[in-house]
Image (tube, rainbow, N blue to C red):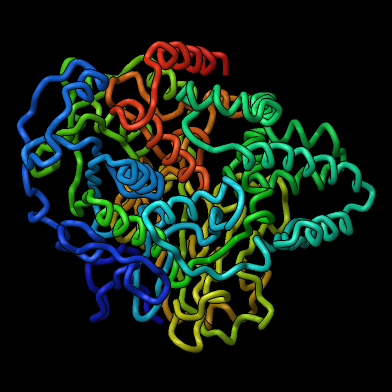
Length: 595
Protein backbone atom coordinates (compact mmCIF):
# COMPACT_ATOMS: atom_id res chain seq x y z
CA UNK A 1 0.00 0.00 0.00
CA UNK A 2 1.25 3.48 -0.83
CA UNK A 3 1.28 5.88 2.12
CA UNK A 4 1.91 9.37 0.89
CA UNK A 5 2.03 12.70 2.67
CA UNK A 6 -1.10 14.69 1.90
CA UNK A 7 -0.45 17.49 -0.57
CA UNK A 8 -2.17 19.21 -3.45
CA UNK A 9 -1.10 19.02 -7.07
CA UNK A 10 1.69 20.47 -9.07
CA UNK A 11 0.74 21.43 -12.63
CA UNK A 12 1.36 17.86 -13.83
CA UNK A 13 1.14 14.61 -11.89
CA UNK A 14 1.90 11.07 -13.01
CA UNK A 15 2.87 12.39 -16.41
CA UNK A 16 -0.65 13.73 -17.04
CA UNK A 17 -1.51 17.37 -17.38
CA UNK A 18 -4.89 18.50 -16.11
CA UNK A 19 -7.43 19.01 -18.89
CA UNK A 20 -9.15 22.23 -19.69
CA UNK A 21 -12.65 22.01 -18.23
CA UNK A 22 -14.18 23.94 -21.08
CA UNK A 23 -12.64 21.68 -23.69
CA UNK A 24 -13.21 18.18 -22.33
CA UNK A 25 -16.09 15.73 -22.54
CA UNK A 26 -17.67 16.79 -19.26
CA UNK A 27 -18.15 20.47 -19.97
CA UNK A 28 -19.47 22.33 -22.95
CA UNK A 29 -18.06 25.83 -23.36
CA UNK A 30 -15.29 27.41 -25.36
CA UNK A 31 -12.85 29.58 -23.41
CA UNK A 32 -10.60 31.96 -25.25
CA UNK A 33 -6.91 31.23 -24.64
CA UNK A 34 -5.87 34.55 -26.15
CA UNK A 35 -4.64 36.00 -22.85
CA UNK A 36 -3.73 32.84 -20.99
CA UNK A 37 -0.47 31.09 -20.25
CA UNK A 38 -1.82 28.34 -18.04
CA UNK A 39 -4.37 25.58 -18.22
CA UNK A 40 -7.06 27.19 -16.08
CA UNK A 41 -7.34 30.37 -18.08
CA UNK A 42 -4.80 32.13 -15.91
CA UNK A 43 -1.20 33.22 -15.72
CA UNK A 44 1.28 31.20 -13.70
CA UNK A 45 4.31 32.38 -11.76
CA UNK A 46 6.32 35.39 -12.83
CA UNK A 47 4.43 35.69 -16.11
CA UNK A 48 1.42 37.03 -14.28
CA UNK A 49 2.52 40.66 -13.93
CA UNK A 50 1.67 42.05 -17.35
CA UNK A 51 1.43 45.47 -15.81
CA UNK A 52 1.70 47.09 -12.43
CA UNK A 53 -0.32 50.31 -12.45
CA UNK A 54 0.91 53.16 -10.32
CA UNK A 55 -0.98 53.86 -7.14
CA UNK A 56 -3.26 56.82 -6.76
CA UNK A 57 -5.27 58.02 -3.83
CA UNK A 58 -9.02 57.75 -3.93
CA UNK A 59 -11.75 59.24 -1.83
CA UNK A 60 -14.51 56.69 -2.25
CA UNK A 61 -15.74 53.90 -4.46
CA UNK A 62 -18.36 56.26 -5.84
CA UNK A 63 -15.79 58.91 -6.77
CA UNK A 64 -13.48 56.34 -8.31
CA UNK A 65 -16.36 55.16 -10.46
CA UNK A 66 -17.24 58.70 -11.50
CA UNK A 67 -13.63 59.38 -12.53
CA UNK A 68 -13.73 56.31 -14.75
CA UNK A 69 -10.97 55.15 -17.05
CA UNK A 70 -10.40 54.43 -20.68
CA UNK A 71 -11.35 50.82 -21.37
CA UNK A 72 -8.51 50.53 -23.85
CA UNK A 73 -5.82 51.72 -21.45
CA UNK A 74 -3.33 49.05 -20.40
CA UNK A 75 -2.01 51.17 -17.53
CA UNK A 76 -5.24 51.65 -15.64
CA UNK A 77 -6.81 49.84 -12.73
CA UNK A 78 -9.23 46.93 -12.63
CA UNK A 79 -12.83 47.31 -11.60
CA UNK A 80 -12.34 44.58 -8.98
CA UNK A 81 -9.57 42.42 -7.59
CA UNK A 82 -10.72 39.14 -6.05
CA UNK A 83 -8.39 37.53 -3.50
CA UNK A 84 -8.74 33.76 -3.76
CA UNK A 85 -10.48 31.48 -6.24
CA UNK A 86 -12.84 29.53 -4.02
CA UNK A 87 -16.34 29.04 -5.37
CA UNK A 88 -17.60 32.23 -3.70
CA UNK A 89 -14.78 34.29 -5.19
CA UNK A 90 -15.14 32.77 -8.65
CA UNK A 91 -18.91 33.30 -8.69
CA UNK A 92 -18.46 36.94 -7.66
CA UNK A 93 -15.75 37.42 -10.29
CA UNK A 94 -17.68 35.81 -13.15
CA UNK A 95 -20.91 37.61 -12.29
CA UNK A 96 -19.04 40.93 -12.38
CA UNK A 97 -17.29 40.05 -15.63
CA UNK A 98 -20.63 39.26 -17.25
CA UNK A 99 -21.86 42.72 -16.24
CA UNK A 100 -18.90 44.27 -18.06
CA UNK A 101 -16.44 44.68 -15.20
CA UNK A 102 -12.73 44.03 -15.67
CA UNK A 103 -11.78 41.61 -12.91
CA UNK A 104 -8.48 40.19 -11.70
CA UNK A 105 -8.55 37.04 -9.55
CA UNK A 106 -5.38 36.31 -7.58
CA UNK A 107 -4.95 32.71 -6.44
CA UNK A 108 -2.16 31.59 -4.12
CA UNK A 109 -2.10 28.03 -5.42
CA UNK A 110 -1.67 26.52 -8.91
CA UNK A 111 -5.31 25.53 -9.49
CA UNK A 112 -8.64 27.22 -8.76
CA UNK A 113 -11.31 26.01 -6.37
CA UNK A 114 -9.95 26.17 -2.83
CA UNK A 115 -11.97 23.70 -0.77
CA UNK A 116 -13.76 22.72 -3.99
CA UNK A 117 -10.54 21.86 -5.76
CA UNK A 118 -9.03 18.47 -6.58
CA UNK A 119 -5.78 16.57 -6.79
CA UNK A 120 -4.56 13.43 -8.54
CA UNK A 121 -2.51 10.48 -7.33
CA UNK A 122 -1.63 7.33 -9.28
CA UNK A 123 -4.79 7.34 -11.38
CA UNK A 124 -7.13 8.50 -8.58
CA UNK A 125 -8.81 11.94 -8.75
CA UNK A 126 -9.69 13.16 -5.25
CA UNK A 127 -12.01 16.01 -4.27
CA UNK A 128 -10.28 18.25 -1.74
CA UNK A 129 -13.52 18.98 0.12
CA UNK A 130 -17.11 17.84 0.10
CA UNK A 131 -18.45 15.69 -2.73
CA UNK A 132 -22.09 16.53 -1.85
CA UNK A 133 -22.96 19.05 -4.53
CA UNK A 134 -26.06 21.24 -4.32
CA UNK A 135 -27.04 23.98 -6.75
CA UNK A 136 -27.17 22.02 -10.02
CA UNK A 137 -30.96 22.06 -10.36
CA UNK A 138 -32.62 23.14 -13.60
CA UNK A 139 -35.48 25.14 -12.09
CA UNK A 140 -36.15 27.73 -9.42
CA UNK A 141 -33.69 30.34 -8.16
CA UNK A 142 -31.51 28.52 -5.63
CA UNK A 143 -29.69 26.55 -8.33
CA UNK A 144 -26.68 28.78 -7.79
CA UNK A 145 -24.05 26.67 -9.55
CA UNK A 146 -26.22 26.22 -12.64
CA UNK A 147 -26.81 29.98 -12.78
CA UNK A 148 -23.13 30.80 -12.29
CA UNK A 149 -22.06 28.44 -15.08
CA UNK A 150 -24.80 29.61 -17.44
CA UNK A 151 -23.64 33.20 -16.98
CA UNK A 152 -20.30 32.29 -18.59
CA UNK A 153 -21.86 29.97 -21.19
CA UNK A 154 -20.76 26.74 -19.53
CA UNK A 155 -22.63 23.56 -18.73
CA UNK A 156 -21.24 20.67 -16.72
CA UNK A 157 -22.41 17.08 -17.13
CA UNK A 158 -23.63 15.73 -13.79
CA UNK A 159 -24.78 12.41 -12.38
CA UNK A 160 -27.89 12.49 -10.14
CA UNK A 161 -27.40 10.88 -6.74
CA UNK A 162 -30.44 8.76 -5.75
CA UNK A 163 -29.79 9.50 -2.07
CA UNK A 164 -28.20 12.43 -0.26
CA UNK A 165 -26.81 10.53 2.70
CA UNK A 166 -27.23 7.27 4.58
CA UNK A 167 -27.23 7.83 8.35
CA UNK A 168 -25.84 5.15 10.69
CA UNK A 169 -26.72 6.38 14.17
CA UNK A 170 -26.86 5.28 17.84
CA UNK A 171 -29.36 2.63 18.80
CA UNK A 172 -29.12 1.01 15.37
CA UNK A 173 -31.01 3.90 13.75
CA UNK A 174 -30.45 3.75 9.99
CA UNK A 175 -32.06 6.38 7.74
CA UNK A 176 -31.54 6.94 4.03
CA UNK A 177 -32.30 10.43 2.74
CA UNK A 178 -33.70 9.63 -0.69
CA UNK A 179 -33.75 12.16 -3.51
CA UNK A 180 -37.54 11.90 -3.63
CA UNK A 181 -38.96 13.79 -0.67
CA UNK A 182 -41.93 11.45 -0.26
CA UNK A 183 -39.61 8.43 0.01
CA UNK A 184 -37.46 10.13 2.65
CA UNK A 185 -40.44 11.22 4.73
CA UNK A 186 -41.95 7.72 4.53
CA UNK A 187 -38.63 6.26 5.69
CA UNK A 188 -38.35 8.68 8.62
CA UNK A 189 -41.97 8.19 9.69
CA UNK A 190 -41.44 4.42 9.62
CA UNK A 191 -38.71 4.91 12.26
CA UNK A 192 -40.80 7.34 14.35
CA UNK A 193 -44.48 6.58 13.60
CA UNK A 194 -45.61 8.32 16.81
CA UNK A 195 -44.03 11.56 15.55
CA UNK A 196 -45.60 11.58 12.09
CA UNK A 197 -47.36 14.89 12.67
CA UNK A 198 -44.25 16.53 14.10
CA UNK A 199 -42.07 15.31 11.23
CA UNK A 200 -44.46 16.70 8.64
CA UNK A 201 -44.77 19.99 10.53
CA UNK A 202 -41.02 20.57 10.96
CA UNK A 203 -40.04 19.72 7.41
CA UNK A 204 -43.09 21.65 6.25
CA UNK A 205 -41.66 24.75 7.95
CA UNK A 206 -38.38 24.12 6.12
CA UNK A 207 -40.29 24.06 2.85
CA UNK A 208 -41.94 27.40 3.70
CA UNK A 209 -38.51 29.00 3.96
CA UNK A 210 -37.13 27.24 0.90
CA UNK A 211 -40.13 28.04 -1.28
CA UNK A 212 -39.91 31.70 -0.28
CA UNK A 213 -36.22 31.80 -1.19
CA UNK A 214 -36.77 29.88 -4.38
CA UNK A 215 -39.46 32.27 -5.59
CA UNK A 216 -37.30 35.38 -5.31
CA UNK A 217 -34.70 36.73 -7.68
CA UNK A 218 -31.70 36.33 -5.39
CA UNK A 219 -29.37 39.32 -5.40
CA UNK A 220 -27.75 41.55 -2.79
CA UNK A 221 -29.71 42.05 0.41
CA UNK A 222 -27.64 45.22 0.86
CA UNK A 223 -29.07 46.87 -2.26
CA UNK A 224 -32.32 48.71 -1.41
CA UNK A 225 -33.71 49.14 -4.94
CA UNK A 226 -33.60 45.37 -5.38
CA UNK A 227 -35.08 44.76 -1.92
CA UNK A 228 -37.98 47.14 -2.43
CA UNK A 229 -38.64 45.70 -5.88
CA UNK A 230 -38.78 42.15 -4.54
CA UNK A 231 -40.98 43.18 -1.63
CA UNK A 232 -43.56 44.76 -3.91
CA UNK A 233 -43.52 41.71 -6.20
CA UNK A 234 -43.48 39.04 -3.48
CA UNK A 235 -44.48 40.58 -0.14
CA UNK A 236 -45.55 37.34 1.56
CA UNK A 237 -42.34 35.56 0.62
CA UNK A 238 -40.23 38.47 1.86
CA UNK A 239 -42.13 38.60 5.15
CA UNK A 240 -41.71 34.83 5.54
CA UNK A 241 -37.94 35.15 5.24
CA UNK A 242 -37.87 38.13 7.59
CA UNK A 243 -39.80 36.07 10.16
CA UNK A 244 -37.38 33.14 9.99
CA UNK A 245 -34.18 35.23 9.73
CA UNK A 246 -33.55 35.32 13.51
CA UNK A 247 -34.69 31.73 14.17
CA UNK A 248 -32.75 28.49 14.54
CA UNK A 249 -33.79 25.06 13.27
CA UNK A 250 -33.63 23.41 16.69
CA UNK A 251 -36.15 25.79 18.23
CA UNK A 252 -38.54 25.25 15.32
CA UNK A 253 -38.16 21.47 15.60
CA UNK A 254 -38.96 21.56 19.31
CA UNK A 255 -42.24 23.30 18.57
CA UNK A 256 -43.47 20.11 16.89
CA UNK A 257 -41.28 17.18 18.00
CA UNK A 258 -40.83 15.69 21.48
CA UNK A 259 -39.00 12.40 20.91
CA UNK A 260 -35.37 12.91 22.09
CA UNK A 261 -33.94 10.49 19.52
CA UNK A 262 -35.76 12.22 16.67
CA UNK A 263 -34.53 15.61 17.90
CA UNK A 264 -31.03 14.14 17.94
CA UNK A 265 -31.56 13.04 14.35
CA UNK A 266 -32.49 16.64 13.47
CA UNK A 267 -29.23 17.65 15.18
CA UNK A 268 -27.34 15.28 12.87
CA UNK A 269 -29.16 16.70 9.84
CA UNK A 270 -28.02 20.20 10.82
CA UNK A 271 -24.51 19.11 11.84
CA UNK A 272 -23.85 18.15 8.23
CA UNK A 273 -24.86 21.68 7.22
CA UNK A 274 -23.07 23.70 9.88
CA UNK A 275 -20.89 21.45 12.12
CA UNK A 276 -23.12 22.39 15.06
CA UNK A 277 -26.42 21.07 16.39
CA UNK A 278 -29.87 22.21 15.31
CA UNK A 279 -30.23 24.70 18.16
CA UNK A 280 -27.25 26.61 16.76
CA UNK A 281 -28.06 26.23 13.06
CA UNK A 282 -29.98 29.12 11.45
CA UNK A 283 -33.31 27.98 10.07
CA UNK A 284 -32.63 29.58 6.68
CA UNK A 285 -29.37 27.63 6.27
CA UNK A 286 -30.97 24.36 7.32
CA UNK A 287 -33.94 24.87 5.02
CA UNK A 288 -31.81 25.59 1.96
CA UNK A 289 -30.02 22.25 2.33
CA UNK A 290 -32.79 20.04 3.74
CA UNK A 291 -35.11 21.00 0.89
CA UNK A 292 -32.85 21.56 -2.10
CA UNK A 293 -31.56 18.00 -1.77
CA UNK A 294 -35.08 17.01 -2.88
CA UNK A 295 -35.92 19.96 -5.13
CA UNK A 296 -32.77 20.29 -7.23
CA UNK A 297 -31.20 17.15 -5.85
CA UNK A 298 -27.60 16.18 -5.22
CA UNK A 299 -25.71 15.94 -8.50
CA UNK A 300 -22.09 14.91 -8.89
CA UNK A 301 -20.02 16.56 -11.65
CA UNK A 302 -18.51 14.08 -14.10
CA UNK A 303 -14.76 14.25 -13.59
CA UNK A 304 -15.00 15.42 -9.98
CA UNK A 305 -15.93 18.56 -8.06
CA UNK A 306 -12.85 20.36 -9.39
CA UNK A 307 -14.42 20.77 -12.83
CA UNK A 308 -16.76 23.44 -11.39
CA UNK A 309 -13.92 25.81 -10.51
CA UNK A 310 -12.05 25.01 -13.71
CA UNK A 311 -15.12 25.87 -15.80
CA UNK A 312 -15.71 29.13 -13.92
CA UNK A 313 -12.04 30.13 -14.23
CA UNK A 314 -12.04 29.58 -17.98
CA UNK A 315 -15.41 31.28 -18.32
CA UNK A 316 -13.98 34.29 -16.49
CA UNK A 317 -11.19 34.60 -19.06
CA UNK A 318 -13.67 34.11 -21.88
CA UNK A 319 -15.47 37.23 -20.61
CA UNK A 320 -12.27 39.27 -20.81
CA UNK A 321 -11.05 39.13 -17.22
CA UNK A 322 -7.98 37.47 -15.70
CA UNK A 323 -6.90 34.93 -13.12
CA UNK A 324 -3.30 34.67 -11.91
CA UNK A 325 -1.92 31.63 -10.08
CA UNK A 326 0.91 31.49 -7.54
CA UNK A 327 -0.14 35.04 -6.74
CA UNK A 328 0.06 35.17 -2.94
CA UNK A 329 -1.65 38.31 -1.63
CA UNK A 330 -0.10 39.41 1.65
CA UNK A 331 -1.60 42.89 2.08
CA UNK A 332 -4.65 44.87 1.11
CA UNK A 333 -3.41 48.37 0.30
CA UNK A 334 -5.30 51.12 2.11
CA UNK A 335 -5.07 54.82 1.30
CA UNK A 336 -6.88 57.26 3.55
CA UNK A 337 -8.81 54.31 4.98
CA UNK A 338 -9.95 53.01 1.58
CA UNK A 339 -9.01 49.75 -0.13
CA UNK A 340 -7.26 50.59 -3.40
CA UNK A 341 -5.32 47.45 -4.27
CA UNK A 342 -3.24 44.52 -3.08
CA UNK A 343 0.42 43.63 -2.57
CA UNK A 344 1.82 40.18 -3.32
CA UNK A 345 4.51 38.29 -1.43
CA UNK A 346 6.98 39.10 -4.23
CA UNK A 347 6.32 42.83 -3.86
CA UNK A 348 4.17 43.32 -6.95
CA UNK A 349 1.13 45.54 -6.56
CA UNK A 350 -2.19 45.65 -8.39
CA UNK A 351 -4.82 48.36 -8.07
CA UNK A 352 -8.58 48.40 -8.50
CA UNK A 353 -11.71 50.36 -7.74
CA UNK A 354 -12.77 47.58 -5.37
CA UNK A 355 -11.15 44.66 -3.57
CA UNK A 356 -13.09 41.47 -2.77
CA UNK A 357 -11.62 39.05 -0.24
CA UNK A 358 -12.54 35.38 -0.56
CA UNK A 359 -10.38 34.65 2.48
CA UNK A 360 -11.89 33.94 5.88
CA UNK A 361 -12.79 36.92 8.03
CA UNK A 362 -9.81 36.14 10.29
CA UNK A 363 -7.40 36.03 7.36
CA UNK A 364 -8.87 39.21 5.86
CA UNK A 365 -8.95 41.27 9.04
CA UNK A 366 -5.77 40.71 11.02
CA UNK A 367 -3.53 39.46 8.18
CA UNK A 368 -4.42 41.10 4.87
CA UNK A 369 -5.66 44.14 6.77
CA UNK A 370 -3.36 44.66 9.71
CA UNK A 371 -4.73 44.54 13.24
CA UNK A 372 -4.13 48.22 13.85
CA UNK A 373 -6.43 49.05 10.92
CA UNK A 374 -9.35 46.86 12.05
CA UNK A 375 -12.73 48.63 12.03
CA UNK A 376 -14.77 48.34 15.21
CA UNK A 377 -17.36 46.26 13.35
CA UNK A 378 -14.75 43.59 12.61
CA UNK A 379 -13.54 43.63 16.19
CA UNK A 380 -17.15 42.96 17.20
CA UNK A 381 -17.36 40.08 14.72
CA UNK A 382 -14.28 38.45 16.20
CA UNK A 383 -15.73 38.89 19.68
CA UNK A 384 -19.08 37.36 18.66
CA UNK A 385 -17.85 34.53 16.43
CA UNK A 386 -15.27 31.81 16.90
CA UNK A 387 -13.53 29.64 14.34
CA UNK A 388 -15.31 26.36 13.68
CA UNK A 389 -13.14 23.27 14.00
CA UNK A 390 -11.23 21.96 11.04
CA UNK A 391 -11.15 18.35 9.86
CA UNK A 392 -9.02 15.29 9.77
CA UNK A 393 -9.42 14.17 6.16
CA UNK A 394 -8.48 10.76 4.80
CA UNK A 395 -8.35 10.09 1.06
CA UNK A 396 -8.09 6.42 0.18
CA UNK A 397 -8.02 4.22 -2.87
CA UNK A 398 -9.42 0.76 -2.11
CA UNK A 399 -10.17 -2.45 -3.97
CA UNK A 400 -13.74 -2.32 -5.25
CA UNK A 401 -14.49 -5.79 -3.91
CA UNK A 402 -14.61 -4.49 -0.33
CA UNK A 403 -17.81 -2.49 -0.99
CA UNK A 404 -21.24 -4.13 -1.36
CA UNK A 405 -22.82 -3.60 -4.76
CA UNK A 406 -25.63 -1.42 -3.34
CA UNK A 407 -23.36 0.93 -1.37
CA UNK A 408 -24.60 4.53 -1.14
CA UNK A 409 -22.34 7.40 -2.15
CA UNK A 410 -22.53 9.36 1.11
CA UNK A 411 -22.63 8.12 4.71
CA UNK A 412 -22.75 9.72 8.15
CA UNK A 413 -21.63 7.52 11.03
CA UNK A 414 -22.13 8.05 14.77
CA UNK A 415 -22.14 4.64 16.37
CA UNK A 416 -22.85 4.69 20.08
CA UNK A 417 -23.45 8.01 21.81
CA UNK A 418 -25.40 11.05 20.61
CA UNK A 419 -23.34 13.20 22.98
CA UNK A 420 -20.29 12.63 20.75
CA UNK A 421 -21.91 14.27 17.71
CA UNK A 422 -19.92 17.51 17.96
CA UNK A 423 -16.80 16.13 19.63
CA UNK A 424 -13.55 15.83 17.67
CA UNK A 425 -13.58 12.48 15.85
CA UNK A 426 -17.03 11.75 17.29
CA UNK A 427 -18.87 11.49 13.98
CA UNK A 428 -17.59 10.49 10.56
CA UNK A 429 -18.67 11.72 7.15
CA UNK A 430 -17.80 9.41 4.26
CA UNK A 431 -18.09 10.00 0.51
CA UNK A 432 -17.49 7.37 -2.17
CA UNK A 433 -17.80 9.42 -5.39
CA UNK A 434 -16.76 6.48 -7.56
CA UNK A 435 -20.16 4.94 -6.80
CA UNK A 436 -21.43 7.63 -9.19
CA UNK A 437 -18.41 8.30 -11.41
CA UNK A 438 -16.11 5.31 -11.86
CA UNK A 439 -13.72 7.35 -14.03
CA UNK A 440 -12.20 8.89 -10.89
CA UNK A 441 -10.32 5.68 -10.02
CA UNK A 442 -8.45 2.93 -11.85
CA UNK A 443 -10.60 -0.01 -12.90
CA UNK A 444 -11.49 -2.29 -10.00
CA UNK A 445 -11.05 0.42 -7.37
CA UNK A 446 -13.08 2.95 -5.39
CA UNK A 447 -12.30 6.24 -3.67
CA UNK A 448 -13.16 6.73 0.00
CA UNK A 449 -13.05 10.32 1.26
CA UNK A 450 -13.42 10.48 5.03
CA UNK A 451 -13.89 13.56 7.24
CA UNK A 452 -14.04 13.97 10.99
CA UNK A 453 -13.83 17.22 12.94
CA UNK A 454 -10.47 18.03 14.48
CA UNK A 455 -8.93 21.02 16.27
CA UNK A 456 -5.65 22.52 15.14
CA UNK A 457 -4.45 22.76 18.76
CA UNK A 458 -4.03 18.96 18.73
CA UNK A 459 -1.53 19.23 15.87
CA UNK A 460 0.55 22.29 16.67
CA UNK A 461 4.14 22.17 17.92
CA UNK A 462 4.76 18.51 17.14
CA UNK A 463 8.11 17.25 15.82
CA UNK A 464 7.75 15.84 12.33
CA UNK A 465 8.02 12.23 13.46
CA UNK A 466 5.40 12.69 16.19
CA UNK A 467 3.13 14.54 13.77
CA UNK A 468 3.24 11.71 11.23
CA UNK A 469 2.68 9.09 13.93
CA UNK A 470 -0.31 10.98 15.30
CA UNK A 471 -1.81 11.26 11.81
CA UNK A 472 -1.48 7.52 11.27
CA UNK A 473 -2.94 6.72 14.68
CA UNK A 474 -5.94 9.04 14.25
CA UNK A 475 -6.62 7.76 10.74
CA UNK A 476 -6.29 4.11 11.76
CA UNK A 477 -8.87 4.54 14.54
CA UNK A 478 -11.39 6.01 12.10
CA UNK A 479 -10.73 3.37 9.45
CA UNK A 480 -11.20 0.61 12.04
CA UNK A 481 -14.56 2.12 12.97
CA UNK A 482 -15.66 2.09 9.33
CA UNK A 483 -14.42 -1.47 8.98
CA UNK A 484 -16.46 -2.57 11.98
CA UNK A 485 -19.61 -0.65 11.07
CA UNK A 486 -19.79 -0.82 7.26
CA UNK A 487 -17.02 -2.56 5.36
CA UNK A 488 -15.40 -5.71 6.82
CA UNK A 489 -11.90 -6.16 5.47
CA UNK A 490 -11.51 -2.46 4.67
CA UNK A 491 -7.95 -2.07 5.99
CA UNK A 492 -6.58 -4.93 3.92
CA UNK A 493 -8.20 -3.49 0.77
CA UNK A 494 -6.38 -0.13 0.92
CA UNK A 495 -3.99 0.52 -1.96
CA UNK A 496 -3.40 4.25 -1.37
CA UNK A 497 -3.92 6.46 1.66
CA UNK A 498 -3.28 10.13 2.36
CA UNK A 499 -4.12 11.91 5.60
CA UNK A 500 -4.65 15.65 6.01
CA UNK A 501 -4.94 17.55 9.28
CA UNK A 502 -6.04 21.08 10.18
CA UNK A 503 -2.44 22.10 9.48
CA UNK A 504 -2.82 20.76 5.94
CA UNK A 505 -5.99 22.77 5.40
CA UNK A 506 -4.37 25.91 6.81
CA UNK A 507 -1.35 25.52 4.54
CA UNK A 508 -2.97 24.66 1.22
CA UNK A 509 -6.35 26.38 1.58
CA UNK A 510 -5.01 29.49 3.37
CA UNK A 511 -7.66 29.23 6.08
CA UNK A 512 -6.82 30.48 9.55
CA UNK A 513 -6.45 27.39 11.79
CA UNK A 514 -7.85 25.35 8.89
CA UNK A 515 -11.31 26.45 10.05
CA UNK A 516 -14.52 25.40 8.31
CA UNK A 517 -15.93 28.88 8.95
CA UNK A 518 -17.42 31.06 11.69
CA UNK A 519 -19.52 29.81 14.59
CA UNK A 520 -21.40 32.09 16.99
CA UNK A 521 -19.77 32.30 20.40
CA UNK A 522 -23.18 32.12 22.09
CA UNK A 523 -26.63 30.94 21.02
CA UNK A 524 -27.27 32.79 17.72
CA UNK A 525 -30.41 34.55 16.61
CA UNK A 526 -30.53 32.75 13.29
CA UNK A 527 -28.58 34.64 10.65
CA UNK A 528 -29.22 38.04 12.17
CA UNK A 529 -25.61 38.49 13.27
CA UNK A 530 -23.92 37.33 10.06
CA UNK A 531 -22.23 40.11 8.09
CA UNK A 532 -23.07 40.56 4.44
CA UNK A 533 -20.56 41.54 1.74
CA UNK A 534 -19.79 45.18 2.45
CA UNK A 535 -17.31 46.06 5.18
CA UNK A 536 -16.60 49.20 7.19
CA UNK A 537 -13.60 49.84 4.90
CA UNK A 538 -14.69 51.65 1.76
CA UNK A 539 -13.96 49.65 -1.36
CA UNK A 540 -13.37 46.38 0.51
CA UNK A 541 -15.89 43.53 0.32
CA UNK A 542 -15.92 39.99 1.64
CA UNK A 543 -17.33 36.87 -0.01
CA UNK A 544 -17.55 33.23 1.01
CA UNK A 545 -18.38 31.30 4.15
CA UNK A 546 -17.57 34.14 6.57
CA UNK A 547 -20.51 36.07 5.10
CA UNK A 548 -24.26 35.60 4.97
CA UNK A 549 -25.58 32.95 4.52
CA UNK A 550 -22.58 30.89 5.72
CA UNK A 551 -20.91 27.59 4.89
CA UNK A 552 -21.53 25.17 2.05
CA UNK A 553 -21.30 25.34 -1.74
CA UNK A 554 -24.82 26.65 -2.26
CA UNK A 555 -24.34 29.28 0.46
CA UNK A 556 -21.00 30.61 -0.79
CA UNK A 557 -22.36 30.69 -4.35
CA UNK A 558 -25.25 32.82 -3.08
CA UNK A 559 -22.71 35.02 -1.31
CA UNK A 560 -20.84 35.46 -4.60
CA UNK A 561 -23.99 36.47 -6.49
CA UNK A 562 -24.92 38.95 -3.76
CA UNK A 563 -21.42 40.41 -3.63
CA UNK A 564 -21.22 40.91 -7.38
CA UNK A 565 -24.55 42.74 -7.39
CA UNK A 566 -23.51 45.11 -4.59
CA UNK A 567 -20.09 45.81 -6.14
CA UNK A 568 -21.63 46.32 -9.59
CA UNK A 569 -23.97 48.92 -8.12
CA UNK A 570 -21.08 50.68 -6.40
CA UNK A 571 -19.00 50.93 -9.60
CA UNK A 572 -21.89 52.06 -11.77
CA UNK A 573 -22.82 48.83 -13.54
CA UNK A 574 -26.18 48.50 -11.73
CA UNK A 575 -28.74 51.06 -10.64
CA UNK A 576 -28.28 52.43 -7.14
CA UNK A 577 -29.55 55.09 -4.76
CA UNK A 578 -26.75 56.48 -2.55
CA UNK A 579 -29.22 57.87 0.00
CA UNK A 580 -31.14 54.60 0.32
CA UNK A 581 -27.85 52.68 0.34
CA UNK A 582 -26.55 54.61 3.32
CA UNK A 583 -29.78 54.15 5.26
CA UNK A 584 -30.05 50.42 4.58
CA UNK A 585 -26.41 49.71 5.45
CA UNK A 586 -26.78 51.59 8.74
CA UNK A 587 -29.94 49.60 9.50
CA UNK A 588 -28.27 46.26 8.75
CA UNK A 589 -25.26 47.10 10.90
CA UNK A 590 -27.56 48.08 13.75
CA UNK A 591 -29.51 44.82 13.41
CA UNK A 592 -26.26 42.85 13.68
CA UNK A 593 -25.61 44.45 17.04
CA UNK A 594 -28.94 43.01 18.24
CA UNK A 595 -27.95 39.40 17.46
